[in-house]
Length: 220
Image 1 (tube, rainbow, N blue to C red):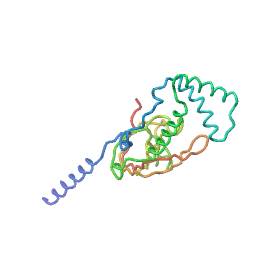
Image 2: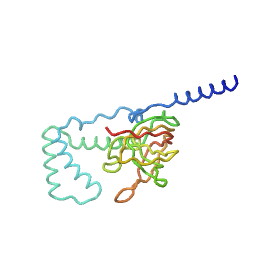
Image 3: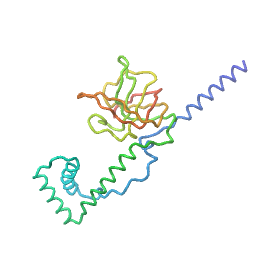
Image 4: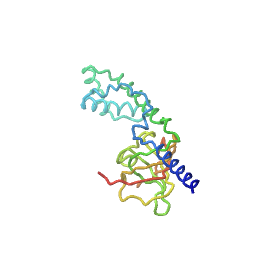
């Protein structure tokens, strides 16, 4: 009897130990490893200045792709460039900075937090079904905001979690239901296919999660 009691206590201690190892994380944790962002000169510009730059950007981007540019758009872009220059802005330098910011965004968006590899985690996000086993969801994307990957461009890969359920669950009533998940995370890229109304699209993800516990939450 004493031996059985000892074994039961040891088993309880082991269970508590496993539970204690679950790390509660947020979406910020997924990118906590990144260095501070570059100074962004666009943050100090007015909405009107940004609108003027966007007109110039349409011309610059089309020319970079070898596309024909409407003469009226070309003329308008030149007018906007003159106005911005008169306001003391170096338009060419701003576009060079834009390229660096885009490169940094793409590069850092593919990197993952090494501290999360092979860690048991708990986090919340929005549930976007991917695969079904019969009427049950077996795979889904965990995303940080409503509309991600469908109504809006996808977030960077290190802000999308590709999740697989050890036990499939009935789908929620609505897309983008808030969900709390617990499972084993890996910092491993994946490219699952998301079915859309107008076809299918591959979504690049930076994290994978094997989910063994899931709880849908009522929308706020």
